[in-house]
Image 1: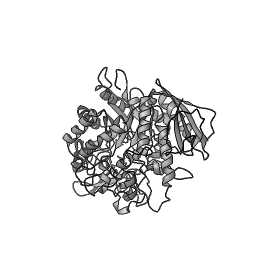
Image 2: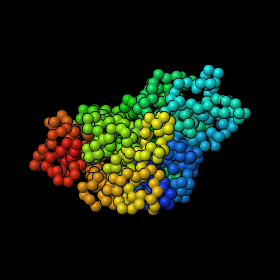
Image 3: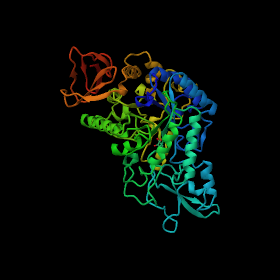
Length: 555
Ligand code: GLC
């Protein structure tokens, strides 16, 4: 696969592991690094190119580890640095690259820097690493009207070392996640040093958390925007997508490039988590001297409707192409409702994201959801570019929509005054063995979020040898995609098909594959000559493409 000049990330399929929930080696009910290492053969067998690990760093775990107290160590919950090194060695031995998460927008309030800031007076260099400001109305009210992504104000007032009510600090997320001040060179140097620390340990790249948030508009003005989750992040918001972020990423790119080895397919990559619209603004993050990739959330949010899908795919390819970057594709991650559930609303496949779904909310149709999820994945994995998968989607796992409220851990639930269920429903631990306690997640019964009963039938061991299973479908899609290098191909829309059929051809150096996705209600009959490579349908539906099914044909 490797070879001089090849840039592995251009067509890579990258599998996201949420370490708390993938595999638990010690039975404490929380996944860990040795558990991941043991289960890596699952990923090699699936046929992905890389694994991305959500944070496993030292953390009070107020936001699932996206609240980092020590950027250079492993939280004892997950293991230690030796366990991390063993994971990387095993992954590389299996031909899998390893991407880790970097959280540069904010630290945990347990980080030594924030502790020092609290212990130091206003105006001190310790405070200058974060965004401390005096309040308005003689200090009584927050400095501006910004709201936290998890609900409530984005500011918290501190008690000064002398016991008096004092300044306020900015936290775009939980109160335990103070935002850094990126105008401070000390912050820039520190985070670059963290990148070097992990690059020196052999990681192949980083997923950059809240990449669009690091720089805030000068003087932090009030905003008219209501923050409906991340979706509203646009160029108009003073806390998102400010021009200053690009200079940071140019510097990061130089750093990553300094680790590349001439003549080897060994690029270290950077991928932005940036909820930025429109696609044209997002494409600025992946200009040639900036980041390699950026998640295509616009695609994730596109309803399962033919015109919208066509427009989103066309726009995505054009915008990334305009700056010479590969497009990325993603349908699920640890922050959104799983696509097997999101797509299960008959009328209008919903856009629910971090709001989550609770037992009292309208429930999706699970059969429809899974059928559409398989069809949507079969579209996604044919598209030119790089694709991201979220753990468990290869099993067709649904969102856990009936979690008992007392089990919820996402800070969104508390901070929204129990109006938004949050993201726990997509983070429920993986089922590996249908008959084992905790479905094989760990050696015992414990699992930090309760697993729904339907996870048993979806466990890896129940699907492995079933040719009609979702796991088998993913393996087949990934195998054909890799064999024919579809990710490096070129997409052409095909005429002559009904309006509600997405019909396109992907041509690579090795082959041409025709993709037909039926988003309508009538079956589409295939000609006798059709050479079907694979179908998202459950077995027994040959000869036509049913509603909410996708086929790949040899062109
Ligand atoms: C990103 C992460 C999310 C986290 C937030 C704050 O959006 O994906 O899980 O809560 O940043 O770090």
